[in-house]
Image 1 (cartoon, helix red, strand yellow):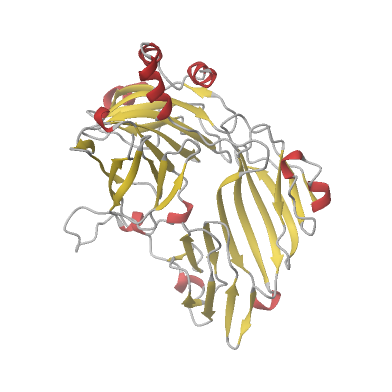
Image 2 (cartoon, one colour; image 1 turned 30 degrees about the vertical axis):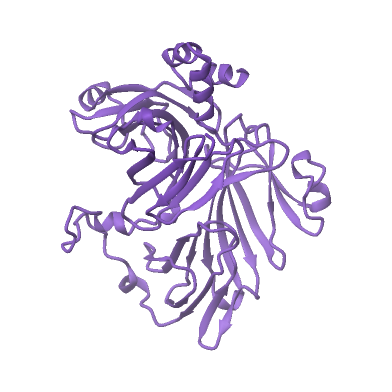
Length: 441
């Protein structure tokens, strides 16, 4: 009950829901069972949303420049510790706060020094760490986002092999991009990846690794690609593929780096008789001048109980439901046009300044009888998911009997089953999930 009162004060549920839940113990118990569970951690350092960009320097240097985004998620944490990989020599380090773009204080410390922080009691005594002083303590259910840049020299990971080069480095971070030196093309690649061209003509590979353990990455490249003006990519257009039997993604959309997309969403299915699911959706706004987020409600769905907050600070934001026409009249700049007749959940916030970013967490409940229903004794969730990272949590008492799309499976602390769908394709992933009640439920 204390958890619920905190949630109510934080504005995550409306007064109407509060009254309805208190109207019956059974209703409250079921709602608590199937409610949203926000990421939370105590007792040890935890991280999320890691993304790494490696820029391979000239092969003779055996060095590569690293751009590393990572997020501290342990409530109250004042520091973040990033291990320096054994066998690598780090130099040219810098750290900035992702929200403000301002430099952060940091020091390199040994494992024994790191262990003095209660959140790092298990720090490796044989490892050095970059200890970052966060711009602000991590708020409850919030985040401390930092960007670390450094250069590694590691001849075992990056070296010449005859006339070519090899980057052989198992990667534990789940989202990565590796940029080859100018003039090199990929001739060997062990992890399925997008192949993209940088604005300056360098070839890059990018991938998401949804499975457990490290991605066994080996890249082989040779120097026979174009350089200079001849290597520059043509601007990606908005045209659709002429072969598609339906309106698919544009060329620009298809060539967007999937691993770097920063939106992710978690659906919490309520009992199927309700046709409802709650969700939270994390999203980073980087466009200067944008002062609002607009979520167009899908046709056939009804949205309710919207709320939002800034994960960097815990600041609560006001969420409003309106039409596209009302949104246009409000002068809220969400960075996109919305059809005047569309129903939209709009979340205003202070305009983003150049060099700053804002990460928001939006929460709401959807009722969608077409895509979520009970078919006899079987639960059916049939919905197209457009994010690169999606998750579906089954209601309490249910187990999965079918998933049309490959998924990884885990369980929440309360026993509910979570299905994760990481989509490395430019199209939406059409998820069809079926489930049954557990015996005895």
